[in-house]
Length: 483
Image (tube, rainbow, N blue to C red):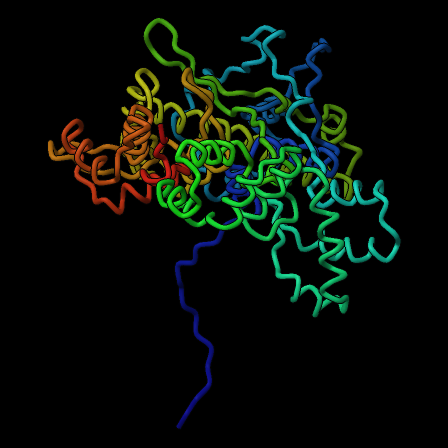
């Protein structure tokens, strides 16, 4: 006979408190996101405020540090501010590592002259898109209202490189305008700036740019129009044979083509150079590398003394006292989370510098393979903590500014048993190509042989091709410079 009954059973359940979730979230925030989060917390929590460094107050300042201990010293032993159970937040033990190094935190704005501060006005730039620029020119052109509607259809179908992304026939089907009408308007758009915009392929792009240069060489137009495919293969002798022009004339046309822009719209792309502010500075002093955190723009936080005093008053009870207590707890945990974020960032940075010391001293060819586990074990945290704290963070070193993920490259074993980072191998390939004879450039097979001979690195030709393409380097045939 079946019987229903209730039973109790103990099961281990992993549960992250709201405070611990907040602390984990703060780890992976960038500098900009962190300052925005701090500002949001300041707006929502009246107990939390920014320390005014110019003010001198006789009262102790409650700021980033052990806030609970300060508060407990302000009360009699019989008064327990939050209660012992409430103060011991779950997960506190995970934060207790190498706290002694907190004293090494350095606000670099204090250690650098004001004249060396970056110009923040240059951090964000905005450029008009190619389509906006074309619309502006159409508005100034002698184009009637009907043509402007068609021009809008064409402009919307021009890609970021400046090419017409779809055939005129397809645009005609979607828009309902005749192909002839679209062709006429397209010719007017192709006369706009930048030269070459609105072309349907590379050959048309070059011919448009040549026409815009106001040169009038029938041979150039004939050769490019009829034998452009041979140009792409650098088969100049075949072109000379088919056209009857001397090879010197073909070379002249070839050099003229090289002076044109194959992607006329790229200078108007929405993509722009991003200026980053380093989270960490690595400075060489007396033969060793010192790690300094960039605390600029990250304010010192403290508790509002008015609310602390209000909480201490005996005549404040009920919901008011409960509200203040809750906000003080939130402020305490928020200050502690920021402190631990900076502590973790410092320790991870210091470990990276220790592992990659040769890179900081000698250059990219000495960058060693490194995994998150190595750093995690070094500082006594979980790998996920290292992953989060290195996300969207940048390190300024004597040899440049690098994203912190850059220091965790994969490795390639050489024949000597050592490991080289992929970054180092790519750097070797770059050096080989830069030193090549431009009239007889090295092939991918040649690069494989040089890597094996000079650096004891054995990799496949297809791997070299992959790295070369990642560097936006053309094949040896396309890199050849003709006499």
